[in-house]
Length: 551
Image 1 (tube, rainbow, N blue to C red):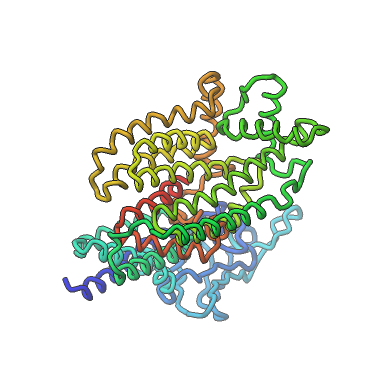
Image 2: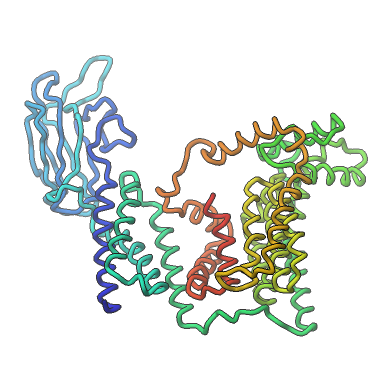
C-alpha cells in the first residue's frame, strides 16, 4: 500500500472510529433523576415544566431522532405538547398512551435547542405550585442507523488525534503500515471513546495538543542528523568555569525566590498538610524518642525538620521549639528545592552539554509549581531533590565508567522512597544503568552486578531514614495501607485515567506548573526521542513517564 493510500485509509478508519465511539458514548436512554439532567426544565420526578429545552448542539443536523416515552395519566386530561426547533414548530402530540413519541431533528440552526411547550399545563396542588406539562419515562437519542450521530465538527476533532497516533506509529514503525493495523487500532479507539461518559470531551483538547506536538517532534527529528552519536558536551576549563558560575547564579536566584517571605501565614496553620508533620515532630521532641508514630508519609522529612529546628534554635534562643518548627520544615524544602536546580544543571551537563544543563536549571528555578512546593513543610521538594540526586549519580557513574558510584545511587534512591512512598519508582532509574551504559536493547553485562548490588542497597537507604517503619511495623502497616487507599481514591472520588485520556495532570498541573511554553518544548522532545531512539533521550523521556503515568 502506497504512503498516500495508507494515510487516506488511516484517516477513513479514524473518522469511522470516532463516529462509532462517540455514538456509543452518548447516554441513552436517559431516565429522569439520573446523574446530569438531559433537559432544562425536567424535574427529578420526571415531570416536565410548562416549557423545557433539550440541547441538540452535540448531534448532527437532519439525522437525529428523539424518542420520548410519557406517562399518559395526569390531572386535567391528556397533555398537548408542541415541539419547536430554531423558532419553528416541527411537531405536536396529544399524549394519550405510553407509546413512544418520535421527533425528528429536521432543521439546522446554530446552537440548536428543542423546546417542548405544553398547551394545557396544570398546577399539581397548593403545596406544589409548579406549572407542569407531562411526566417522562425516558428520552432516547437515535438515528436512522441506530447509534446517535454526533455533530460532524466533534467527529472531526476526535478523528484528528486518532489519525495522528496512527500516522506517528506508521512513521516510527513502517512495518505497521498495513490495513489490519489501522483496523485494530481503530477498534481500540472505539473502546476508549465508548468508555467516556456522555460526550465528555473536555480532555480531548490537551490530548490533541500533546499528540500534535509529539508528531511535530517526530517530523523534526526525521529531518535532523542522526541522534545516535549524542555525547556529553565537552568544553575547555575556561568555558566550563563560565557555565558553572552561571549555574551558581541561577541557583542563587532560585534560593531568593524560595526564601522570599518564607514565613507567610505563620503562626497560623496556613497549609493543612503541614499540621500533622508539626505534630509528629513535637511527639518525638516531647517523648525524647525518634518514633514519629506517623507513617502516612515516610520519616526523612520529619527527621530533617527536627534537625533543622535544633539548628535554628541556636540562632533563636528565646523562641520555643514548637514556634520555630514550621519555619524549620519550610527551610528543609527551600534547601531541597534550591539544590534541585543545581542538580538539574549537573544532569544536563553530564548527559548532553553545559548549555542543556543551564537551560534546564533556569526552567526549574522559575517553575511556579516547584517554587510553591519549595516553600511548604511538605515532602514534594525533598522527593524531587532525592530523585534528581539519584539520577545524577546514575548518569555520572555511566558516563565516567564508575560502577561503584551506582551503589551510592541505590542508597539515595532508598532515601527518595523515604521522602515520599512514590519515590520507590526511583529504583527503576538505578536498574536502567546497564542499558544506559550499553546504549542498546541488551544490557552491559559488566554493569548487571553493580546494578543488582545497588538495588539491594535501596531498602537500606529507606530503612536508614525511616527506621521505625521496621521497629513500629504495626503502626507503619496501618498508616501505609491507609495512604495506599488514599492514593488510589483521592480526596473525594476517583478520576479515571481513561476518561481523561491520560491528560488530567498534563493540562491541570504541568501546564500551569512549569509553564505552557516549557511544556510545549518538552512534549516536542518526546516526539524527537521516539524517532531518534537515542539511549540518553529515551532515558530522560522514560524518567518523565515513569513518574507521570502512576499519577
